[in-house]
Length: 220
Ligand code: GRF
Image (cartoon, rainbow, N blue to C red):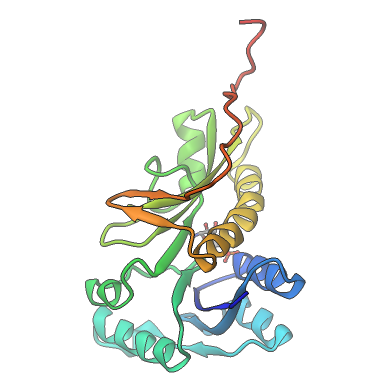
């Protein structure tokens, strides 16, 4: 199968990037990482690229007078590498309208909450403080809002009474590493249909219809 050329935008640790690298190397994800762009020269993600021989570029946002000129530079680099899909993986910058128009429905983001609940930052802490019984993660297409674009796939995890921000974040991150490769594989296979806000996957097997409860039901 033809491999979809992707560009990955990172700012930090890059564990989601690593999950894509691993799935590509084992042959289960039909993508090729043409370029990784980091706005942060110290991002650990860059070390991962070195280790796996993946081309990487640092574009410091502070070197540009405004958001759009930074984004134009990123687009120039992405186009130079013939990128089809832009994958935001822990990229801590908001994209300009110009950039979004440049890659319509071709930018994905991952967010560590069950959108539309808890957009923005520190969302694992917010889920705990709010007393949510479930949280999870979401892969969505990027649009003009913050964490608001059409939802592609979600995973649900329970929030435990004993959870700290760290333990919940770790449980969610484990699922992020599963759903991001899945979302990109569906894109690679041309199986994502977008109608307004709704993204569907024709011929998708129906997910288990059973509800999950937290706390568990005691015989009801
Ligand atoms: C992840 O939780 C992701 O959902 C959020 O930032 C974190 C990045 O982690 N957008 P990593 O850099 O992929 O390890």
